[in-house]
Length: 526
Image (tube, rainbow, N blue to C red; front, side, top):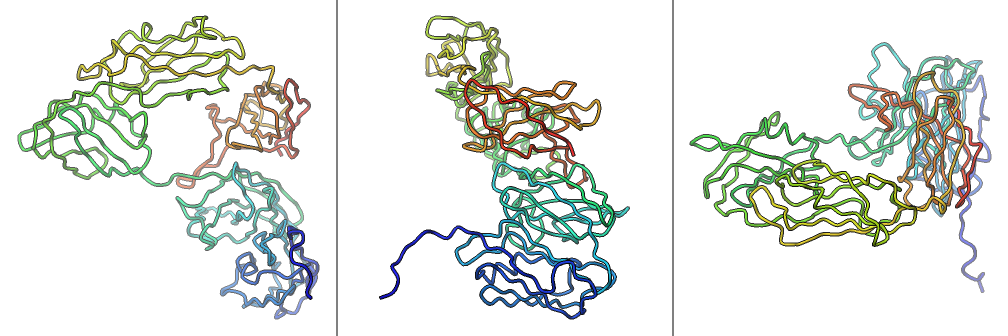
């Protein structure tokens, strides 16, 4: 009989137990192969995908994997005038799919000296970052960093917690970037991969080290394309785009044109659909049924045709989107939000339409505003008692759209609950080492649930900060220099190149408990 099936699942990551020649060897035979011995058999295909060699060879190395051993034969000789770095990234897996916990690098030279420069840091993102590529390019006067076209000279992979290490580098100035490399070609794929841009270039000498954090994010490099132009009735025109519309509706009214063989018809209003951000709606002069019109929208050079409709607009306005969502339980003591409609509205006295109550009886005064022809904004004027259950109602009886139609509904209502601070926790501490006079934002990111739901607060002039209204749980705390003072982190860009805003991350996880302040947190800009 054989052994019984089953047993504990293998979750132990493989380890590099030996390297030959040993790391740091000098005077190495230029034709020597490098042999790695692991703690257990590894997946042969994963070794090739996670192998990085600097300086990059002209051709791919030959890799032979047998059980626990991987032998690397380089196509070029080991150099005598610089350090050869052979790295295995965290993409190396054992036969059960467990990854190396962190990258492993070995440095060799046929000469007599190993460079010892190091750049370490952290890749930072709400989503998992293990296996993210981190590359370094030597900076020159004409450097144009383009990870999509030019592979970096130095390359490694981030570990499960985002830590990365580029080592055995010669003295010089380097530009760092990180990306997903989903297609495994070691180049950044715009629109597919996430990308992290540094806040500065890194200067090291042959025996020094530097630290740099990178914020990895998805960048929308695509341009919104106009896909379809259609007329649902004689007064509306629907523009369907390939993605979220970032056009200014007021500018569209000025620059767009609708024409036929006899002349042009006017555009009165424009707005982004409250329920679909890829739709732009225009309100036009009366269209003629069956007539073929041409629509243009500079700077787009396309000419889009649609057929006019003689059907009148007889549909009344209805609520199509709103914030806060119904039954939200995390609203501040002075709540605010907006109500979006499926059509443009004629301006009316909003103060008599909107009513906000707390716990069914207390009437709360609100301020209202028009955020567009189809969106009404509101904000409570007074603080509401923590824990109160609120109801916001909108009287639709006197509401009319641009064609004069009344709503088919008499009223609309949404409910939400105000946060009770007594049920929440607080993080407090100090941010140190920032540039004098530059505002700093402190941010708490939950490590469970929605990791992208961050809470941020500006630090005071002395660096102290307090972040409140946090649910119990584990948090990662970070900070950034808000150079443009917009209270949003600036991710930088590739073209034209612009550095990201400076950031730093607290190395320790912070625990938050209800009705408790977790204090003494110190974050330092390195």
